[in-house]
Length: 194
Image (cartoon, rainbow, N blue to C red):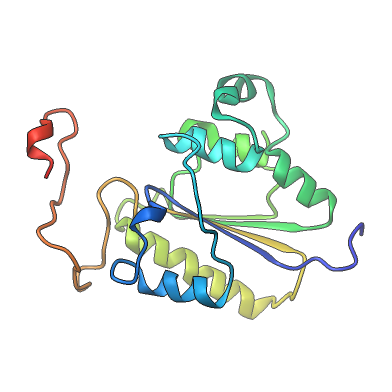
């Protein structure tokens, strides 16, 4: 292996979650995590849609290159390629649709060769996004119990409960009300948004 130490890497991809809305009232657990661990003071969106955002995140390239790479590149995300070369195992847990715009192939390669494990719960439409997110963490916890490797792993979590209309467990106490169940994007007028 090229590295003497390979600390585990955890990446949580959370859709439509704005840093400027994270505060003690809206996300107390994230605030506490930031106090105890790493807190990045600034974050900037690289795109306004899922596929170019994921592309920019995993390729380290501006989203304008998305269309060209999508048509030409078959080896998967450059960041994941480097991690594989360094000897990392890559595990993905997803409740978001990895096949959206072919992101599974763009991230993990045409044959999925960069991923050692993909747990994809996005196709189970009988479950709400929040429940699919929970399955990702339940599976991750089970995997750690069965194979508690202390280093050399990349754990990728693609979560979906914050995407579009937020998804909560039925008994989850809402912090802000009222909240709509569904947004009519095509018919909503700006004056109705508030």
